[in-house]
Length: 319
Ligand SMILES: [Zn+2]
Image (cartoon, rainbow, N blue to C red; front, side):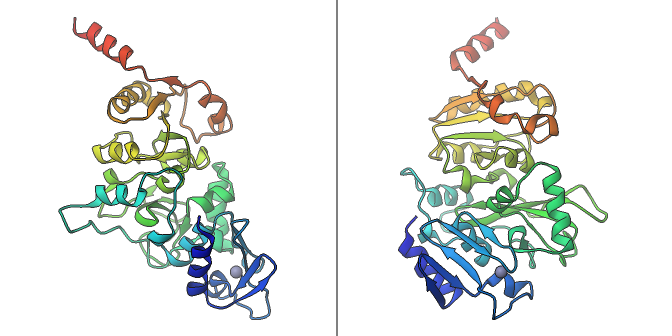
């Protein structure tokens, strides 16, 4: 991350700040949004060297300034993107959203009153946080994934909203019901689910990336997993994986997709340049209570998807 560019961006977006040692204190945008702003409080402390920010008034806290920029502005400007490795993530993302030469498919915008969980407190957001913590997802992971909610949007009020950020832009989102009535999950009507990978941006910083199904499964692995939002992997998703800086992918689907898991690993091994492995889960999904605390241990027992094995099996099946 380029500190000078980040500072320039923060100054331009958040306004004047008071500099104390390594810290810059800005007027907190989340206090302003939630009506808690108090001119006497010491504001949002930003430490560019430690790559962290905190506000003691509203409780907003993050261990990455890119998340602060995203939470305050809705997107991360392209010029601030610098991933490890030489792959141009922004170009890779744009390539799967291009419909023809000059038109790029428009991203699905977040609900109009979307509030990131990290920047909010109160009974409503506490209920959302409780729902996620019951599923074993700690605050810092919710923060990294930009999880939030919308109170007033009539369609997703009562739902926890899970944005899909790709190249710093929210391209899609999905929602799970926490309270009230309505279907268990809710997806925006205009769907390009097949062109997105949940948690793509964070996963681009990992050497071993786990490929799993839903958002809560992905979150159970910390920040190293992408969710394909279903159990089918599309051509665009394969292309996105192939362009990631990762060195290895581990396919880790729910237990009821044991065969599909191996099949998908072989398909990937055939189509991406990176090493591919898989893990066949014996029961449940990565997010259930039994599995989620053992995931790192289970990952150690992943098996490499051996193309030779796959061909031999195919041969045995045919002859
Ligand atoms: Zn604040």
